[in-house]
Length: 59
Image (cartoon, rainbow, N blue to C red; front, top):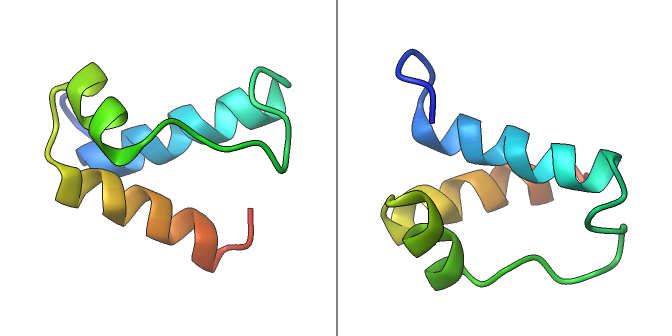
């Protein structure tokens, strides 16, 4: 993960990239909070913030 961006923003951009590249088609479930937290070595709170922003943007 990049040092200059907040971790939640990096995760949000990662998830958007998966969707835009059809690696995670719209409507499919994303990995769980625990899976994402473990994969990126971040807290579940950080994961929740990224997901919350995506939901609020209706992405």
